[in-house]
Image (cartoon, rainbow, N blue to C red; front, side, top):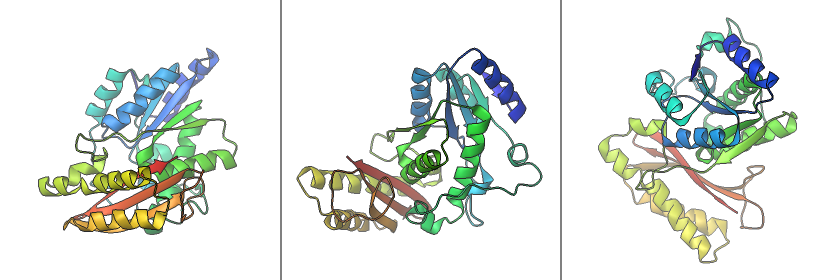
Length: 281
C-alpha cells in the first residue's frame, strides 16, 4: 500500500491508474479508523480497481470551541487497517499541504445545512464541502463512500455533487454498530465507562421508534415524542435535537409517506455529543 503525504504524490498515481483505464474509489475519513470505516473501504474494494483512503483531520470543519486538538489520532493503526483490507493508497496530508499558507475559497450548500447539526455547528458543513471538493479533484475518483451515521453530511454531499455536476457517484453505506447497538464513532473513545453504558439509549430509542413504525404508526410527531421520552429516562443524557425530515431536502415532515424520511437525533452523554439516525424507506 502506498502512503502519500502530498497532493503531488497522489496525483502521480492517479494519473497512472487513469491512463490504464482503472476505476478509483475514494473513502474520505478523519482517521482513527474503526469497523465503520472498514465497511466503507471494503465496499470500495469490491466496486473499484483502485481504492484511495484519505486520513485527514480537517480543521475547517471544527468550530472555535470544538475538539480539533483532542480529536483522536492513530495513523499507524489506520495504515495497518487499510492495508489489511486492500486499500491501494492512504493520503495523509498536513493542513498546510491541503490549504497552503492562505485559503480564500469555501464551498457552501444552502438549506440542507441550516437545521439538525448545522444549527449548532455553523461552520461545519462549509468545511466538509470544501475539503470533500478538494479530495474529489485530487483523487479524480469514480465513486466516493460515506457512512449513513453522518446522514446530514451524506445528504449535503449528494446535493452538492448534483448541483455542481461533479462526475462522481456518491454511495451511502449502512451504520455499523457495537453489539449493544451503539453506532461506531471515533468520539465514543471520549466516553467514560458509565457514559458508555448510558449511550445505548440513542440506539434503543430508535429501535422503539422503528417498532412503532412497523406497527403502522405514520404520525412523526408521535414517533419523535416516543424517542424523546425514551432518551429522557437516561439521567446522563441531554437532548440536542430529535427531528424527522425529508431525506432529500432535510425539511421537517409531519407524516410518513412514499419519500425517504430521516429520523435523526443528537444527544449529549455527559459532555460528549453523539448522533444517530434511521432512514425510513
